Length: 112
Image 1 (cartoon, rainbow, N blue to C red):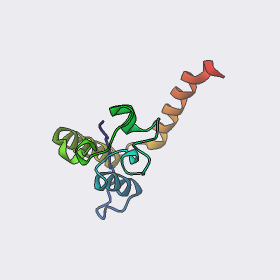
Image 2 (image 1 turned 45 degrees about the vertical axis):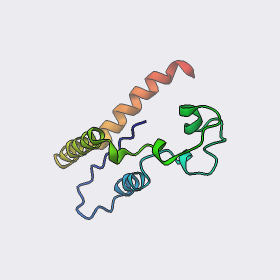
Image 3 (image 1 turned 90 degrees about the vertical axis):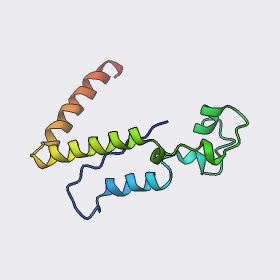
Image 4 (image 1 turned 45 degrees about the horizontal axis):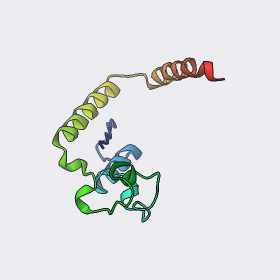
């Protein structure tokens, strides 16, 4: 399992909500909460059972740790820098949001 968190905030104080969210994920090993919620070994729709099968016993070595994935960490850092650059150069988030909304509505038009 890989988790990608991108922080594109130009704030120097690292106070954005996204930064806090990504830091929280990294502080908790980047793993799904299923590994620590207390039901991970018995929940039939949880990540541990899906990855390791019924009767799984969660051990420290099976919990994904994004900090031990240097390629993922490097890719996330590069993506964050690119996003930050785009935002500093006047990237129009509203226009992008409207574009994505139109694409999604077109994709789901047939299901209505």
